[in-house]
Image 1 (cartoon, helix red, strand yellow):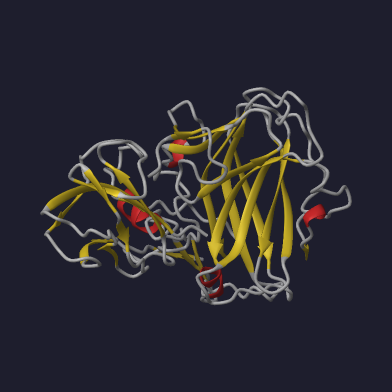
Image 2: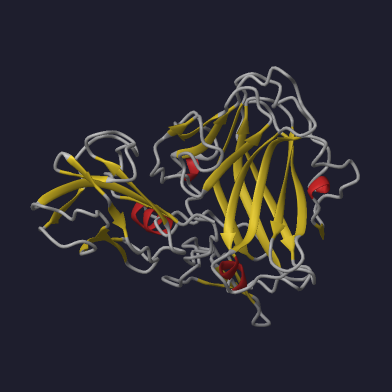
Length: 391
């Protein structure tokens, strides 16, 4: 056996035993996968929170981009937040993670109801799976799902992965028993299946759920783990433990979420904040300064639209997106003078029906004056906007 020392070969570690060549010519390499664009999850390190760092009223995305927290049957609203990690967060902090997606339970005083549920959720475009390189109809081809998780309550949590093209399929999994207030790395290697289908479209193709609790209307004790099966609302996963749900102010947080083609979990693909923000803006974009909450009455970072006296239905200036959005977005305008004011935009002291005329996903949204009286004098409009094309 001889050792060949290698200098700069991409993906090969710099240790002295990086490559070993046997007498018969067989080569063994100590390889670290450094290839980019492995992670199919956007914002898996929870860096980007365009909507703000905390929310207690939104059933869906409330803070951390791309990640939802859905709930129903609750007595008190949970709170979701972008939580800052410290060196005491043993595990993920040492791997370079500085934020988590953190959910705090409300006081569910009526107990665990049949139709109650709360779950973290992530959605992926079908085309991202169809073109990922995963031979998803083959049982010998795999994707690997990995993440860090911490719960204030010691229990086992269930989740499931659901496909939405063709006939819906479901893959149920579990975290295993977690120790309270301790970070645990979870890795699931998932094979393909002949029933899976992913169309090359920008529509939803895959949903990933990690659940705090689902009532028995959605679960069944006979559901098998770690295998694909036809999806049905009442058989998403095995029956859930209700400890977390019935514990007031219980917390659950995750970070380092990665989904990649292959049978091995590689090191997390850390991307820069700028990269993650641009990827997130495909689904949601705001004109507010990054650290300014949506609906804040401020002119800082606002679009100033200079409207010259014009006839009715004359075209107005346009606001352009920083990136092409997934689909034609829902656009909302906010006044810089009055928080959360939407609809008509003020022209001087008189409301004029300045409408968003056309909303495209590849460029911009122009304005048009729909006011029956037209604009009688040159005016300036200061407004902030949000554009959402979430799955």
